[in-house]
Length: 248
Image (cartoon, rainbow, N blue to C red; front, side, top):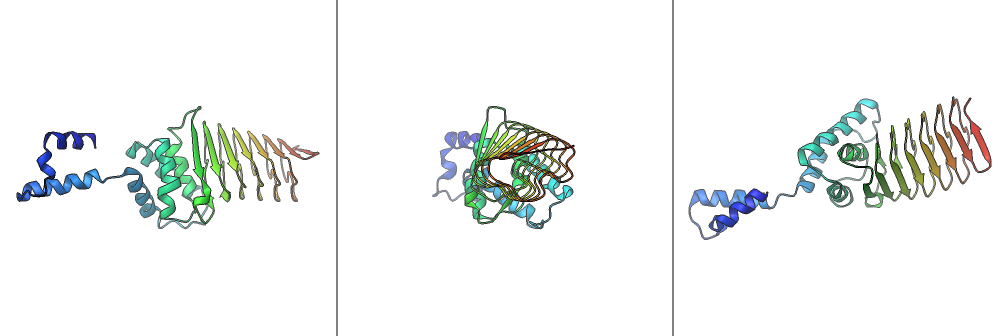
């Protein structure tokens, strides 16, 4: 893009409307289109085209990895940065979609570029439906979500921190391996399923089936929780108000 701008500075007549030279007119049209290029908008459109055939309800490892790796690939191809990812999620994509498995794509986009001191802030309220997969394999830095209905949040998380300024959906911290998740509101069912390590703090209430098949880590619920706490857990610690549940 900078190269095109420098070219136009050296050859201002390329964009002169009065030119009747067909070759020059063709070049002018090409450069005008190039100057209108917005990589964030183009990335949004590419994801919509690519993901249109993937059912939003189909959560399995193959689909998850496919979406995540597509995001990692686009991050390299577009040389995306965190500010552009914020604009993509908060402004561009809400015009094209309602929610779905978008979170796994966003997680792939930022996975290799976020650093320990970085903050990525995403606004969930821009979407009318739930979003699954934000914070998938999150390794470092801080992911801050504003709003509700984030499902499969922090799945396979490895490090860093996720802060939810709102409520969390089902499967918070599923198969979590490290890091910290803090939810300022409530969380739904299946918190910390198959959790191996890390820390989850829920400042409100949690639903049913907390810490199922948990083998490590710690879950703290400052409010109340539903039924089946620590079902089939083999390790880790769950604290619900004054109740402590330790896996055997």
